[in-house]
Each structure stands twice: as structure tokens, then as C-alpha cells.
Image (cartoon, rainbow, N blue to C red; front, side):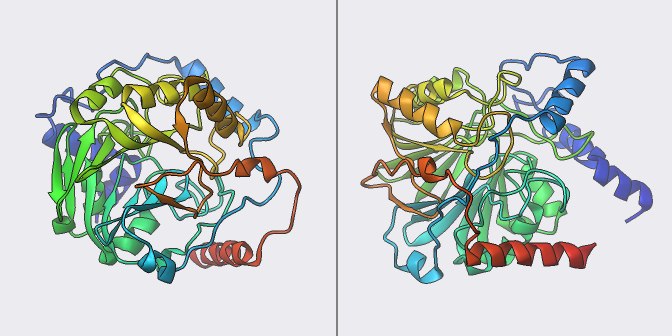
Length: 375
């Protein structure tokens, strides 16, 4: 690859050019970039820089846990023996589902940091419940968008040969192909498009967010939520999104849902358009005509100004007040999609500093060694 081409890829220029050339047919594309149904309000450079300064240098205390989080360690044998319609939170928005004897993974991030850098950026609060190499073969990976806390390049490449298909919004699949993923394994979709894999229906549905992995490739790829329908079971996966009237439309067209996996975390009044406050999470669940709400996008990375446990506390109070059935499984805890349980208020026990478990220490040490070898 030539130096200009390499620089262009680092800056995201190739992705933006490909977007203009390839996706002009999409109603979500304006000829230059992808867009939301409701335009995102313009922000001044001064406001953007001020926000960045606040997030980087003026964070309040409590955005990181004071102790090691309780994580249920998983083994390959446990997963192989688990019944169909099992779901496991592995961290943030990474979820492992077992459907029809095969495994599906959403927004896989096993990296130590949600960042383009190995030694800088939001660091994990906990080790994954299962090591990346111990995962069973995957029937598929489902991606919502290309931000670093939802799409980790090293994780995807490690999974490439053990994954049957990658389902992505428009443009995200092209990123995977650029990284070396076999194009025959990649399927990408616009909103309201989808596919069936081994009898299970997957539909990319609207979301209100944005995309990009570098300085100049903003919104060159699409973002989406997903609907998964396995006969009588219907599951909604939000990815990242602000609150918008698309939830009602999704509920009317593809609901009701047995379980909604909806983002509840990394929110702030300074960016209300792209992430929901807990009040909006609960309302989105109601709009979707959901039965059980499982809050995700929390408990793994420090991505906002709120205390790390605040999303759990707020959504718990709001769900109780509005009569919404809420499930809060620990990381690694099995959730039976046929008979969902409420889960414990496990975050309330994370109060005192303790020594890291040996398994978590080994994981952190391994990641540190990898960073040292690559530097």
C-alpha cells in the first residue's frame, strides 16, 4: 500500500469516499454521509472542545468502581451444556446468545481498553467472564456500529475463522473486509433489511446515533439496532441510540418483544441526542412493547460523568415506578430467555477495595504483556 493510501486509511478518508460511492441508494444517506431521521443539532467547535476537556480532565469521583466487580466465570463446557435460548452478558454491549444449538455474539469487545490506543483510553472494570480463545465457534457476530466500545479490531480478527457470518449495518461490513475478513462471511444491511440464518430472522432497525473511528470518517458507516426472531421468541438489541419515535415504529412493525436489551449508561445532559437517560430507556422499552427489560451498555467502561453504578440504580427505580419487569444479571450469569429472572442488585455490594481475583490478574497481566510486545 502506498504512503498516501495508508495515511488516508488512518484518517478515515477511504471510508468516507467509499460511503459516497456505494451507499447513495440508501434513504439514510445524503450523498455524502449517513444521517438520522431527525437531524443532529450542530455544535460549535468551542462547545466540542469544552466537552472534551471536561470528560478528559474534570471527571467527578466515582465513575470507576472502588472494588472488583462480581463476575461469574464461564467455561466452554458450561456453554456447550447450556440449553437453547440462553443469554450471557460478557461486558458493556457484548452479549452471547445460544439459539438452536449455535452461538451468536453482539458488538464483541474483549480488549482491555475501548480505544484506538493500547495504553490510553477507557479501561475495563472487569475481565471478560470467558477468555476470547475459550469461546465456542460462533454461528454469527451481530454489529450495531463501528465505535471502539462496540467494534474491536483485534477481537474481530481473532474470531474471523471461527465465525460463520458477520451481520452489520451498511459500511461496517466494508471495514471488516478491509481488515481481512472474508467477504463471503460478511452481510450488511440498511434499516428494515435483514436475513434468515438457520431459520432465525435478523432485521436491522433504526437507531439515533452516529459513527466513525477517526478524524475524518464520521458517519461514513451506518448505525442500527437489531431484532432477532426465533419462532415465538423476539429479542430487541438497541446498540447505541438516543431516544426517538423509531422505537414505537419498531414495536408496531416487529414487536411485541419478550426481551429488550437497551442501552442504559454513558449518558449525560451534554449529549442527549446520542445516548438515552434511564427515563428514556424505560420509555423506549414501553414503546417497543417489551416484556422484560435488560439494561446494557454499562458496568464495563468509564465513558461518561455519572457514577459507575448510577445507571443500575436509576433504571431500577424507574422500572419499579412504571411497572416494568427488569432483569439485571451479573456479568457471566446465565439468563434464560424463556423464563427471565430479575437478578440481584449485585452492584450494591461493590463498596470496599479488595485484591483482584487471580483470574482477573492473569488476564490483565496477559494484556500488559501483549502491549509490551507490540510497542
